[in-house]
Amino acid sequence: MKKLDRYDLLSLGIILFVIIFQVSRFRFLPQFIDDYYHLLVARSFLKAGGWVGVSFWDYAPVGRPHLYPPFYHFLIAGLLKLGISGIISLRILGVVIPIVFFLSLWLILRKIFSTLLSFLVVLITFSSFSFYISLDANLPATLGIIFSFLSFYFLKKNKLVSSLISLTFSIYTHTGVFLAFVISLIVFSLISQDKKAFKVIFSGFILGLPLFIHQLRYIEFLKLEILREMYFTHYNLLVIILGIAGIFFCLKKRGVYSWFPGLILGFEIIFLKYPYRFFSAQGLFCLSLLSAVFLESIFLKIRKAKFKRVLFFIVIIYFLFINSSIILEEARAKFRLLNSTFSELSTGRFYDFLEFREFTYPEFFFPLKRIVLENTDSQDIIASNNKIVAVLLGSITNRAISTSIFGEVRPFLNFVPYSVSKIIIWVKSLFPEKKDLLLERYERFKWEKIFENDIAYVYKNPYYKKITPFRAAFPFFYILLIIGGSLVAIFLELKFSSFL
Image 1 (cartoon, one colour):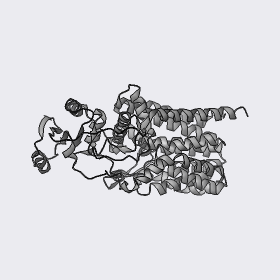
Image 2 (cartoon, one colour):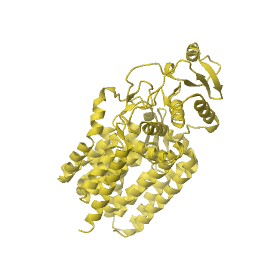
Image 3 (cartoon, helix red, strand yellow):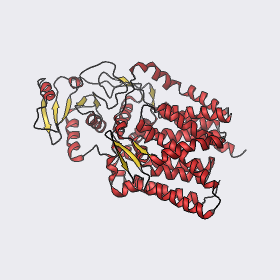
Image 4 (cartoon, one colour):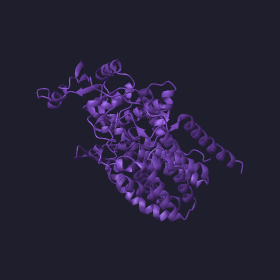
């Protein structure tokens, strides 16, 4: 066990700030719409009694294949089962998972590489605000990275069972992160001639077969789209430049450092169609790793202690308080000199970021929630002309919705969402002086207006369908057994190896 040095103390100082900031955000979470979808899935798993491969909770009552890896939904379902409310469950995970990410990052990198490198990675990833907020906005991806790093750490420590289990958790958490990680392991194995990684990868694919077979079975329903988030991409200039330079330093160092170029290659291949994910989120994390390698190499080459201290001070000041970026906002580019996490928080400009924008306003949504609950039962369907409103209300009222915010997987059949829904929440036009022709068209079907507030009308449709929840293909009992058994296996391998 390495003793704590000054770099560790600096890392822990940043992590302490992360803990304080995350806890202070508790009542404002969740602040990204994806979490409401995940909550809707978790509630539906509880209705089914476990994992189901067909989504009956959105695009209801027709449904569609459910292809999303389920581990994050199991975590939410576990908290719900303990009696914790849906929003509080999301807040707990939103606070805890980014903290675990930074702690894991620091501990793993200092054990495999050096305390200097681990500090530089913690510093750069924390200071890149677009990446920092993506940790909360894309929690399954964050978990996937944690599991991937654990898998690599156990691999390097020759704990192959623990490495395999961590890789399997990554498979069932986030497909994109898992595939990027596998590509990185392949590149690392080819460069370092480490054959153990291929054993872990092959075994991981065997354990992931149930999910892979299910996904391949419905591959025709998948349609990859360019997401709207691409119009909110942030480019951290120095991180990109240093990251590119870091690739050559890693290839020169070889050994364990050869994992990082493979990692950036994996994320580039997987997230090629999603520039936001590569330059502002998961890919920026890889660029941060490479940037840290470059800076570590420079510091180690400098012999004059005074010059090294000055450069170290400049690096800390730049990343903590400056970290300039080019920001693509609604397809318009602008330069922001001060774009670090500290500067964004201190100036209050973080609402410029899509992931920091509020979606719930209690004074507007709580009355809508009450109306939905009073006029529906657990098998009724709700709809809205705004998909975000539909998934938000569906998740907090535990009702199926006839639309979805994710269009990557199409429904089994095409249908008119309003025709099957008992309650329709029609968000008012931003231009009230203009007639809403689409609303007038549907009102002819004898919709009854039962509520109105400043943002929406609520209608009851006399002609509607109900859902029948699917029975779980894989009950929670077996899920708990597998997760518990996996954790015991990791504990035993680590405990047993300590006696050797």
